[in-house]
Image 1 (tube, rainbow, N blue to C red):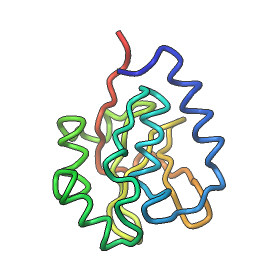
Image 2 (image 1 turned 90 degrees about the vertical axis):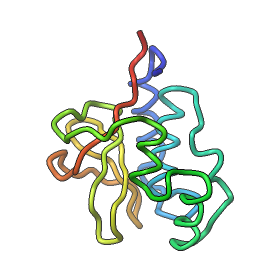
Image 3 (image 1 turned 180 degrees about the horizontal axis):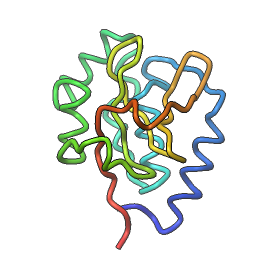
Length: 138
């Protein structure tokens, strides 16, 4: 569940990491999203993956060891059904195709924020394939 101040926490997290470049096992798509979810909820879903890999091949091994076998399977295992892109709301996790293959990002301000070699960038929401909902507080 998201904390009552999740929106400001997520905004701060994105702002603080805007210039953090992509690095396998330190700040890649999964660990960026895990950090965003931790900012919103206080739960660190990325803990099992931290320090486990430093290459693309290593990330795939970590997904098989600690997750659902691949990116989509891991996020479905953690957050339930993969929903159509029109269901995506602020703070949800979006799945998007990149030059490196599928990646995950965080929905914010009508965009999906993803990690690139230069840092974070926002892409139009219509580019996502679908999303996983991060439940709001009740």
